Image 1 (cartoon, rainbow, N blue to C red):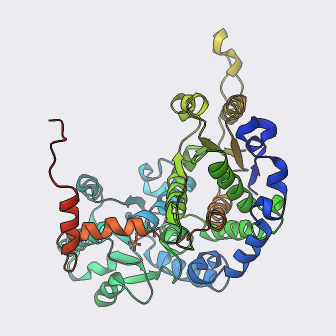
Image 2: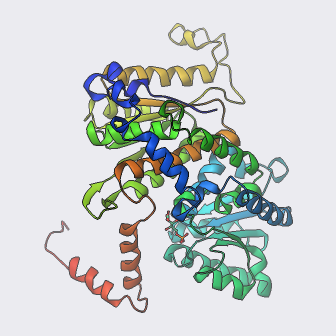
Image 3: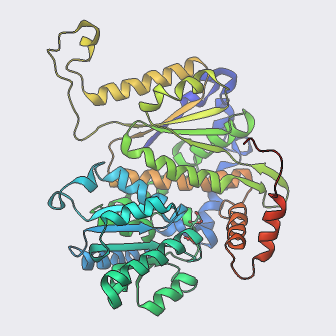
Length: 468
Ligand code: PA5
């Protein structure tokens, strides 16, 4: 079970930069009405854009697991590679789960030592990047997993069009057998393409937005293909959801995490929120968190239409690596951050530093485990931050496995829902992202978007302000 240690966010540890424990623990209005908000979220779960909170419950859970396992079983042994095509919420979770739960050298292992095909995620339209993946993934032996709820996202559409042509050239009419698409079950451009071409599909369920979709087929299919225990991922999420439904703040890690970050962010001048796992595999969960926290909470208007310009800047870091890079700033730079550590209690395998080196200056390391060193460094950094009154918290993970990663994902999704409620904003839209998408359509000549081209050209017209 994950735990959340927040002592270092309180004034008792970090003085005026921390929160008053009495205010945090008050269950009424003082603590932003947590019990009332929990009641509201327990009511709205499974409705509107909060359907993601039913992904680990029946009937959605079994429907998705059965469909994902059936397609993954059918594909087993047929492909040397799986290449995921998607972007944002349709890619970041896939990358994070693979990186957390499979070995870092997974793709380099001989096929017999891997539980599935090599896995690549192409989440950009950088041509050099795509071409380099295609150079080592022969379309004849590759399954392309295209993920797009709308099917209209320019990046994913462009990738898909290139792949389709490469597949047609390589395998001819049976190209669609090399594609599994994850898209809206009923509508959208990708749905039409799949229906017309006979592409196998899995659903992005209605009411589940991109950044909340990792525990839907969006993230589950590529994970299952690579031998990850997706049932355990959902079990972990369900267990965390149960804890996060408790109206008692002190027993509800999602509510507590949101409360700490919202209060520190809005009342104590700490709008920059670092997530710093002490485990390489968890680093990319930091990128997934960054999208969730930034895109959900960065909003101009609240739900009553008032201009609020709210939100926090997520920062992804890695311990111990960033102790030698960013921690100088965190400790002595502006006191405008909350640092979130993730501590893994036990690694498998662990390594013991051998004895017998015979060099006095490093003798203290002899016979110690790498985990002991890693976690001592984390504790030392925690101490150093408290010493300079920098608020921080620790999420403790007993070990990195599918159950605990499922807990971690649900924890942040639920904390985001709480934070949205506390800030009074809609955590599920992304109007600012849509503007960029429409301007891209204009620039790329899509019918109906010519006025966007004009707007872009007028705004970004030539100026003399350029150093040449
Ligand atoms: O969180 C979101 O909604 C976005 O990041 C989307 O996932 C992203 O823009 C991709 O959209 P789509 O799945 O429609 O291609």
